[in-house]
Image 1 (cartoon, chains in turn yellow, purple):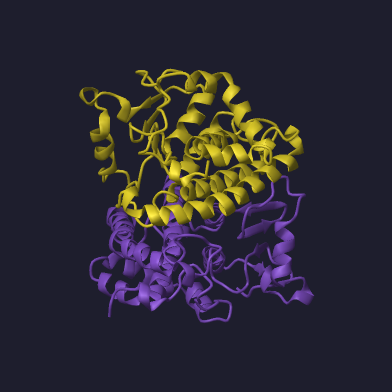
Image 2: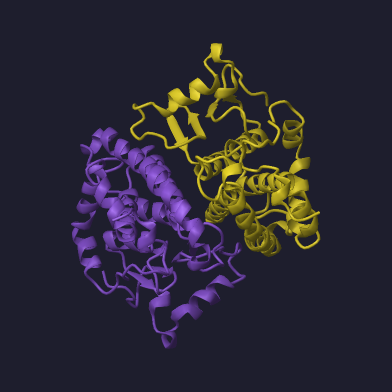
Amino acid sequence: MPTNTEDAEYRLYYWPMIQGRGEFVRLVLEDAGAAYTDVARLPEEEGGGVPSLVAFMQRDDLGTPVYAPPILQHGELYLSQTPAICAYLGERHGLAPDGDAKWRARHLQHTITDFVMEAHDTHHPIANSLHYEDQQAEALKRTAAFRSERLTKYFGYFERTLAQNTDAGGEWLVGAGCSHADLSLFQVVAGLDYAFPRTMAALRDDYPGIFALHDRVGRRPNIAGYLASERRIPFNELGIFRRYPELDAPA
Amino acid sequence: MPTNTEDAEYRLYYWPMIQGRGEFVRLVLEDAGAAYTDVARLPEEEGGGVPSLVAFMQRDDLGTPVYAPPILQHGELYLSQTPAICAYLGERHGLAPDGDAKWRARHLQHTITDFVMEAHDTHHPIANSLHYEDQQAEALKRTAAFRSERLTKYFGYFERTLAQNTDAGGEWLVGAGCSHADLSLFQVVAGLDYAFPRTMAALRDDYPGIFALHDRVGRRPNIAGYLASERRIPFNELGIFRRYPELDAPA
């Protein structure tokens, strides 16, 4: 579904130069085939660009101000915080299990959120306000621990989750079909593949379910179309997942 | 409401020796006057203790395994991840606004979750698996940035949130009354007061709304009763908020 249609049901506010946390929202919108405007990616003269995002962040008429992007506008409703937005959209668009199992999809989405923050902090273990180069020594230590302990802990958990989901024969994390949690885990694997290619190559045989899930999501028609489009911003060294070769496993 | 009643509506599974993330759940249960069993605080011979928690974590019959405590059991439903549990309980027990505003309370709860993770990482910036003493140099740097940049950013945000909530005259974060988000912000302020007393004393005049909210929550009858009871585990150096004087502002 092309972004930025005139009559889009949803408006997404997120930084226009990175995938970042907004990408988890974009993947749900894209898989759902939902019409959305990616506001800050419009030209400034059409009300887009970073100024549109900054202006939104400064709004004082929402009842509760937003803390950080992404923000999703759906009619009169404004949603903030990635896991809440992903669950909201997934539950509206058939990308969540029914009944109590929806709580398990939400729980997985929260767990992925924590995983993403840890992945981010590998290159920024001291302060967001410092450049990577000014915390590189600490980043080397934190990333070594992330690769050897945290990444494997999370992957072990998700592999176990897939194995226990007999509703889908181990193909999806929860329920009988693809959910917002699967789309988000796809993005984490894609991001880690970009950031740590040597580490990830060495893990492939140990976590076959996770890598198969990544490939399965990537083959979904709407996702495949999205990934091949200009709407998919390439990974880069401004986002969450950054390729700093010195942080990856030794060659 | 005393814990560990025979016919408790809820069962909470959390580490018995710390407040930790479980405390955010306990505060909602306590303010609501809900009957709950704090399972791992029962004696081992009554099915409690750490073994009860470990056994729960290893269960493979839940459809989706849990990643980490806290876990709340309510009848047949198992909930995991602190912000999801707090919102679930808050919305059931009149500790959340009605209508679309409930999304804003959830959003605040997510923001507090991020804040808590950052507060934790001040003393563990490199790896959870390392002792504090083995990452103290990095902790000094991360905490300096946390105190000067992050704490003030979050406090500025919550102060602004209080000021904009005209439904409650600035007394509560969202809606007309106390919500799960207010109870959680109380806990963050209490924890930071414990961990960084000098830093917090210096901030008091700059963020009067937040400190007043903390005091207001502490005076709620059920909360005051809880805080004075043996059910409130004291802060200690195993939890999220730890008093390492060298990490606080200089005397």
